[in-house]
Length: 223
Image (cartoon, rainbow, N blue to C red; front, side, top):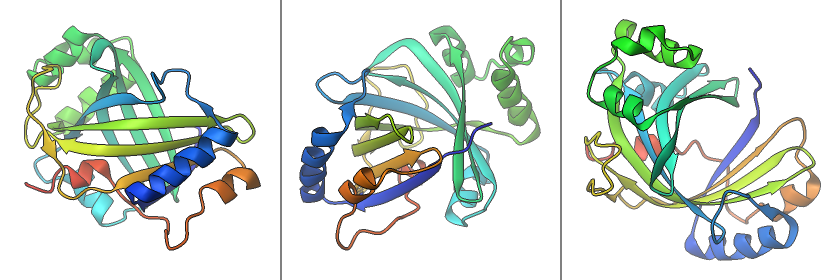
């Protein structure tokens, strides 16, 4: 499991306009982005005691969360993801799911998962049984992604964060979502061993400090 450094900053719309121009001058747009952006829909998992949410809010040093997601309203490619945080560093493991498999998870038909040929699917099944993890809420947003080779740097601008409240109708394109409160725009910076100074300088904004913002947490605001 490879861990990466990560910064998050809550920024304003004006900040985003400034950063967008800076980033375009130095970094490349992610090859998967259409017109510089793409839409993300995720379905997060938690248990009845809100384990993932509480660990995030309490700043637990070693924690993990599971989600399934797809992009640009296209369910032909769905990922199961496990995000792990350890000593301030982050890692992500992924496995593919078909639309039918994702729907079966939403519908609480899980038995097939224990014999799946993907270890991450089996791990989620185990924790659904042992920890009571279940699909919890939908999180939607737009992302503008940029990449930079040295340091394997990835910078993203995430905005228009919306919550499905308690809906788990993940694959329904007509699923109703609403703005997640007064959510800010989120600047995320991720890198491996070093962050090149040119990128460090670009993303510095006066008065903006690293935060522990969580899209999942903000989308639970109405619970």
